[in-house]
Amino acid sequence: MTPPADALPPPPAAGARPGPAPAPVGATDEQRAYDGALDLFKSGNYGGAIGAFAAFSKAYPRSPLVPSAQYWIGNAYFAQRNFRSAIATQRQLVATYPDSQKVPDALLNIGTSQFELGDAAGAKRTLEDLVRKYPQTDAAAKARQRLTAR
Image (cartoon, rainbow, N blue to C red):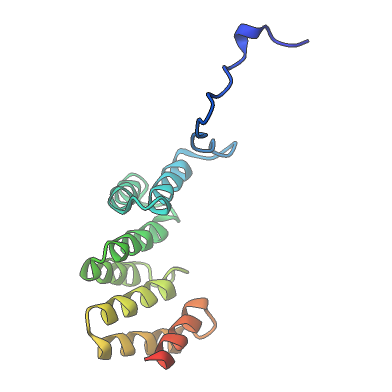
């Protein structure tokens, strides 16, 4: 049995762009908040992403996603070319969540930011530290490439 015509949603207008994908069934408010912040980052809205990830971390301080949110805040600062804030944010991640899987990537971001600020010696130390502490990670492989290229 088909529903009456007035119960169906109207067809999309010609040239209309689809809205955001619906959250997966069973996704929590926590996951939706994180995904929304990540979508802002992916769309290039770095200021919005910083605010959304900060709000996420405040609303869900015990979430296992908080270290990742911190990492993305640092990446958003880097994308804005605010290298000092990127370094400070990533250092906070490393200090607060030393066992996080995001630590090697945060160190890579710190080293790259240091290089962008003209601190080649600091960048070299950070990248060498990354390679020494996390030799099997993708971040270490990228650090090795950057160390040999410079």
